[in-house]
Image 1 (cartoon, rainbow, N blue to C red):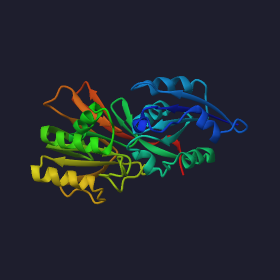
Image 2: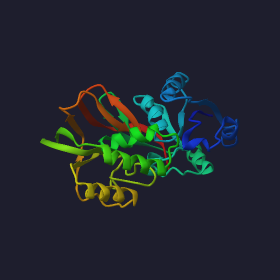
Image 3: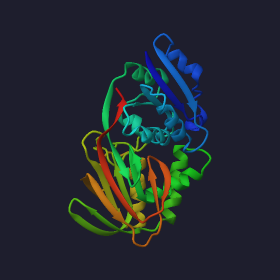
Image 4: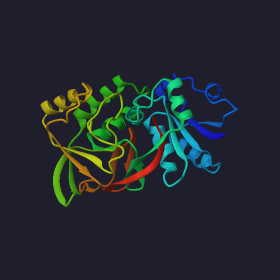
Length: 293
């Protein structure tokens, strides 16, 4: 009998999913599964719930939500033998899309029942983990504004992007990676483990969760015309890399922002403020076992 612990974010996807224990019992009958269900009530609550769930030693802990919920659950499973499952009921669902986990509940639960797993790489930023992507610069400001809105929708993301583009000023950055040292005024520093960042959009269409590398995009200071071009490039879901971006494959990178004391970043679509101006990013190869197609 498989023991599965579900952690549901009730407000993921604007709270329209209606996923409950009663619904899950239809897909995971008692004759074959033992299930436990918790509901996260606020940001970082899924971390507490996951840590408590780990003490019960389930076979799987399933994150039911978007990339932010997945990050909170998965971060607790690093260095454990517990497998991560995903039911994508969030707004963006970038990681689930990369793993080809269906959005339809019936099909997503079938993936979990089948129990096929794979190991994926993990990104680490100082003491934090990311599984899809992280960003410094315009990307972080977009997410900061996006978080302040009541609804997390594509239109809200577009609005946040426009407001951030007007306000954002490039950041003086010192980058050390692949035996290179680069000084630049960064519009965006984007590091991705996944080939999608949500809503079907991608800056790194060739990124792989299993290649032992992270995809780095560096976009230096650009004109207003190129800001607009970049925004249209992302929103139109074009698969080729923005022509002003430098693309590199890395295993680690050290970033210093000498004009900053604290640094705003986004991790898997969630805003964070780091109390430092020095950032170390690295890949942990095969760091998490995850249920997938």
